[in-house]
Image (cartoon, rainbow, N blue to C red; front, top):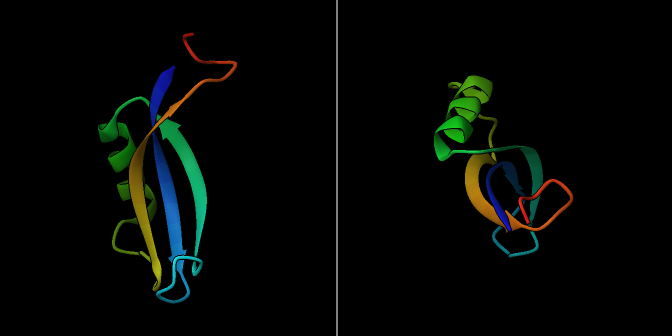
Length: 66
């Protein structure tokens, strides 16, 4: 299993759990890399109803260490 930090862009359209869309903007080895990228992309320009967040994801895939 490999762990990466994924930068997500979340867009909200309401308050219900099905009122959100997410887009992955990339995967990073460290939370610091994820936050720096988010800052570079959105510095003081975050659109209304959107938020960028870094989430730790564990996965098994072709490029994983296992």
